[in-house]
Image (tube, rainbow, N blue to C red; front, top):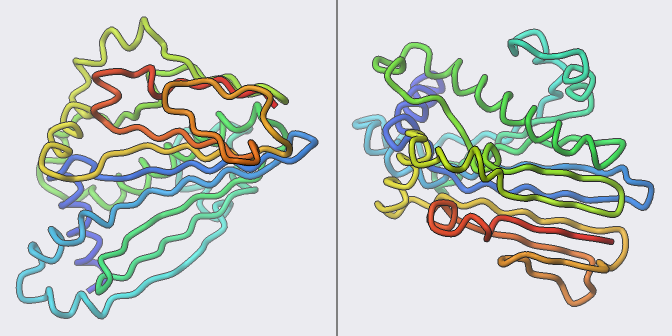
Length: 248
């Protein structure tokens, strides 16, 4: 049953070409160290999985999984890791939380970092881990070779994080070709069918922000938590909504 489940999840994800809600939560300490948690919420795919399951759909409601693994155990199975990425991997975990009766399916990777500069590297490593995981599940699915390469909103932005200053700006030169990104265009089509495709940043600061700029930036009352949320339409219509500059 579990093998069938993962096959169906991979197939459904292919059909919708990546339906998800992503949340990145950064928690910074006074010395610049902290944690990065990245959650992919793929719960919206479960109704389609149940539909594809046919006569096995009723049994699927019995499936519950809540498991956390140390990412260091997966280092040998992920291709093209650099020495630095392997070192970061040793400080990471991945949790899979699935409850089909409640239509819940989330994966969360969590890393600790020594300085804000490592946050971007951890984000890129998270994308590599998820791509590798989906590649393994989709290997035997007919038509996989026809799918466009996976990409993300972050691919079109320049992120610069240092102690006291966090900046994310649009890479205008690269964004000029975004309309040719078949993967993101397919996400836009999925959103048109009611599938949520959103990206949210939550940044927990060690002390109140001195400055928090950006069209979609929201600052908590105590000025220690910054939230930036946008969706696929924002990316194509007004990508500036994903930019921010935080000084603390």
